[in-house]
Length: 91
Image (cartoon, rainbow, N blue to C red):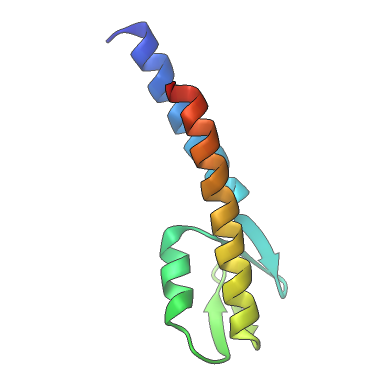
């Protein structure tokens, strides 16, 4: 494999790993990851709910709309950074 291609793929994988961690946030004592699957799950909730955090602990979310907003905001922040950094690596 060409060394340049190898380095580019390695750097992209490292970027994705770094940003996966950047998507973690704390809410009501639980730690969550604002990845695309969690965003989809949260969007399905319509009222106060118990949500499992990354450690498997149940966390009661009273204000689901506030929580949705927080999750979406964090997810978008990470995706914007991914897009920006990805462009730097591939151009």
